[in-house]
Length: 439
Image (cartoon, rainbow, N blue to C red; front, side, top):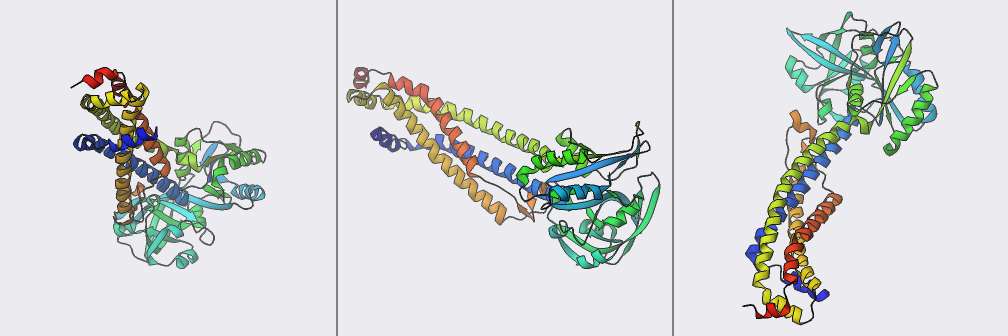
């Protein structure tokens, strides 16, 4: 058998033009699939990291409160929820925030913005993801009505550090409430989900929304081992339901995303008059689950193109092998006369094609690695628009993996074996005498 393997590798380029024509197809298929998986893997990693760093945790707790037949967005009694979490998960990191959508008016211009209220003394999640182009974080933390604006928003209004702006928000009770904010910082960020977020103070937003002192919009829970987030949620649901809350799981990934992204709207009428606090606990995998659907769609497009190219390869394999067998028929007869069995001839031709596929597949991977390295280390792009899903700090996030390379290599090798077998079997069935007499 080693003799046949050696012969197979020597025969790969007996017809260089024919081998190269077939091999270039393997090259482009492997490069295309490897790049697609690197792009979608990087996209998923980038989105998950940015979402968890800005608007979600390993477990995100959101909720709504029913009081006297009216339902309000938010968690009432969040301090009790925090005590339950700390009791059962003392090593976890807990972050509490308040979200509100408000109209901003300045010098004849208006714009509705999303505000996120944080405890500036303890919540450093957003601070670590932004770069202040103007102002200082400590000044924001010491100013009750201070805000840190995205540069895009500041440029729209023509704002600079120290300017005061009027905001008007429709509170949870349906009435409008106004306040003045002071710009204490202007920032840029590479996080797609923070690019238009106005960072404010927790207490300031809660008062603007006319909510009581026990209300929060979201609670983010972070663990050292996020892989066990689903198990931690089960325990937390049990403890919350046993403490007078109504703990729920999101019905779908879309519901999880909506629960995480919803700000405080006006109340809605509830049929039930029973006062209750309903809490929705969503894991990071559920919040970013919609990303998996987008990744699957992109991968599907790449696989469709690859399938077309594989169809061309299958035809090329069949034609090339028929021509090769006709040209090497005396060689086949000689091998059979020397004792080679029908199966040996079949294996010889299959190994030749598989070796060709492996050689050009490896070349395709090498080319793809060069492309991913260039785009992730040299090429810089703006993070505005949809490109922000693929970009972190102006660099493409690409994630080539050995697992993807192994899967592509295995699939192409099996494909080659399958479509090489039938024409190879024809060569193996030629009787030795007929092959030797063939001219």
